[in-house]
Amino acid sequence: MILLDVLHEVNEADTDAFFLINKMHCSFLDTFMSAYSGKVIWIPMYLSIWYVMIRNFHWKVTLLCMIGLGLTITIADQIGATLIRPLVERLRPAHLENPISCMVHIVDGYRGGRYGFPSCHAANTFGLAFFICFLFRKQWLTLFMMAWALLTCYSRIYLGVHYPGDIIAGTILGLIAAYLMFRLFRRVSGHTRMEHVKHINAPVLIGGVTIFGILCYSIIRSVWG
Image (cartoon, rainbow, N blue to C red; front, side):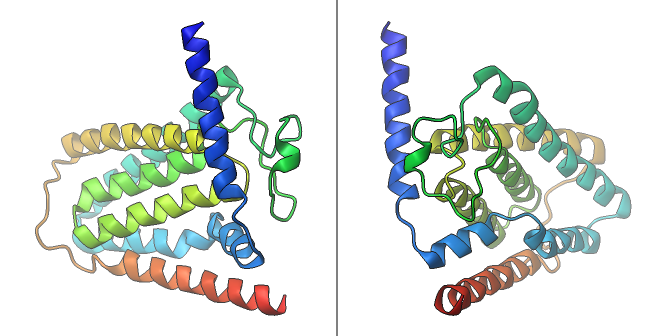
C-alpha cells in the first residue's frame, strides 16, 4: 500500500509538471518546438560531428567511433521501445485513451504513438550527446550538446507527447548506453583523450545556425503564417 501511495504521488507530481510546461504555449513556440523536435533538420549537425571525427582520427578509429555511436543510439532506442514500453504500458499524455488527453495542448494534430515511457527521443539525443562529450571532452561542445538535448526533451513535453518522468527515464537510459559503448570503443580502438582537436567548434556553429534558422522560420510563420 505504501509503495502504491508513493507511485500515485509521483505520478500526480509528474502530471502537474507536465501541464506546467504544456500549457505555456503560443503560436511562435508551437512552430519552434515542432520544428526543433524533428529529426531531418539536425542532419547537418550530425554531419559536422562526423567531419570532426574524420579530421582528427585515423579512418579505422573513426569507423569504430561511428559504430559505437550507432550502437549507443540503437541500444537506447530498442531497450526503451521494444522492452520497457510494452512492459510499463504508460500512455502518452496526448493519446486519446488517456483521460487527461482532452486537456493536453497538441500541435498540428501530432499525438505520437501509444506508449511514451521511456522517451526514445530523450534516450537517443542524450545517448548521442553523452557519447560526444565523453569522446572529445571539450567545454563548449559539451555545454552545447547538453543544451541541445535538454531543449529537445523540453519540446517533447511541450508538444504533449511525454511526461517529465518519461524524459528522465530516457535520459538515464541514454547515459548508460553511451557510457558502456564509449568504454567498449576505447578498449577496442585504443583511443585516448586529445588535447587539441581540429575544428571542434564545427558542431556548435552548424547547430547554432540550425537553431537560428528555426527561430527565424518560427517568427515569420507566427507573424504572417
